[in-house]
Figure 1 (tube, rainbow, N blue to C red):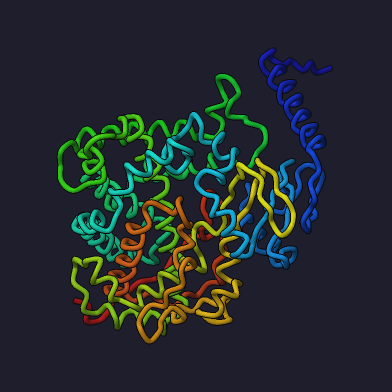
Figure 2 (figure 1 turned 180 degrees about the horizontal axis):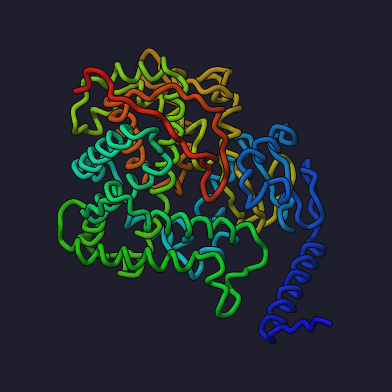
Length: 488
């Protein structure tokens, strides 16, 4: 007979986990019943979780499918690991929740608990702390500040072009691999005035730490059992805390090296009069900047180059527009490139990195004639709105399920569709702080890459997506490049 021997700690952990799971299930059973909206079918307790795929990687696709099938009234609901979630897929209902920001509708408690003890910053903060951090940080990302970062971004973009040229001589260029290194180099240059040379050296440690941190946040937000709080071992189970610690050490070292040098995010924050961020708050927000700025912009650019490779006619139109572009491009000059701008807007509408957002209500709200109580989690289906909203069809056409950048071009230039043209960055009080920086960076890279290179025809099947902390291509975006004839 084989004896099974368990350490006392393992027994306690197993028993504790079982008890906690039972309590969560009991809490779910005892939740007060509310008047329901049309409900997505699911399994007991887990709800729709099995439909979202491993690690929730199909969440973005499935939420759109649920909205198509169950959201004819602009609202439906589902259960996700024991929690009821009200889902909104019409703009009038979504805007009702967004109008409650920043104090009456907040980030969900699940995200707050996931981030607590791992990362802090304006993205995760609420209430008066958020209000103060937002006020202090915003000036570093306004139009004037972004213009001051142009020389640093130009240098990094030239490094990207050299790297693409070298890689293109060896075979297909892996944009999925290169673009996060580029965006991380841009962040180091604009935030610290420091070139870490990640593109040229292919040093991926910082980018991998960002991905690990965001992946851990994504998993922690979806699971009901807070495994990361298990004494001693919990914080090491998903690698999130260790990755964030390493990012913190990197940020502190860069801050020490940068002190007093030039037009950078850090220096602008340091030189503010009156109320200032503490050293700890500054470090936390710079870690958040790396997290928010590395993956999102690189993912959007990957989709942009995929679409340009698929549509050679579109690529030629963009190439004709950018053929005389100088090496350093001001934000004003970039605004004159209407084809590039239209392409960028369409990429964000069609393949934006954040197609949905989860909020939590702090007070009672009426939705479609039914009362949603405080503490309810509310899913805002942004991408479904951007592909179906009657308000948007009236301006951009009925074919919103097609990728067509020309829809944004009108007799007087770019068609203005507020708030939909900026909805991929959020809306209202909590709109993305780095919107102007990301807009400039994205359009600059598209313009300069197409100016210098021909992206060969995409030969593979249509690119699929997967959901992590952001929604990104499910496969690496690899494209064959060749020098564009007569490129200056």
